[in-house]
Length: 187
Image: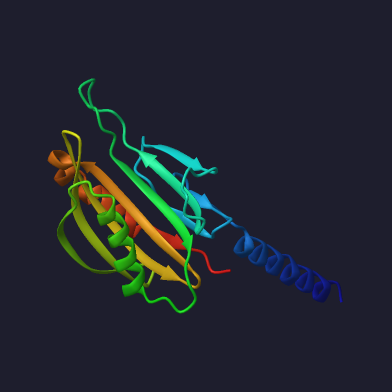
């Protein structure tokens, strides 16, 4: 009888340990987590991450924004590379194509010498994604952008990466690997 109790107790302890370990919510070091909008992304090391809580954006559909700013390479470095995640509410039934076209149209309307360079399709977190690379000029400075757009439920997501146009090529792999690290947590 004593032996049966021992084995029963051993099984209960093992099950408790297994269940307890599997249910822990461990977070990967160096990964940004937004629990309100159930996503995470791994920004590059040594980049400053800024969570924007009170957006100065007139679009009431924008719900969240986080931005990572690259480190200054030298004192002559006047532009910080950045990667931002924007989450916004979308109209029910809106397609990815319509969301993407609307997002690009808004960028073109800003009238900063918008010039599309290339676009394509991609997958982020098993979600069909559209991307675009475009150039803009603000004053004497030229910038290059890589935007990823995808939908999940009633939300649109934009991962917006940008750099000085002359330095974009050296940051493109970083931008792409950061976008690939984006994960949505199932609710």
